[in-house]
Image (cartoon, rainbow, N blue to C red):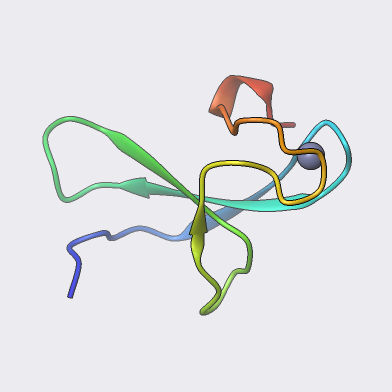
Length: 60
Ligand SMILES: [Zn+2]
């Protein structure tokens, strides 16, 4: 079990791929987790399409 909480928010990579962003609200230090699907799926740190490293500042 992980302690990640918070709803996932839909964002888009620069290439148009849908990225789901989840903020880890369980820790004092805010952390961001990227997912390839809203439900289930797996966490990712690169866009599976354009291979760009995911950065919240680069998502729209
Ligand atoms: Zn991309």
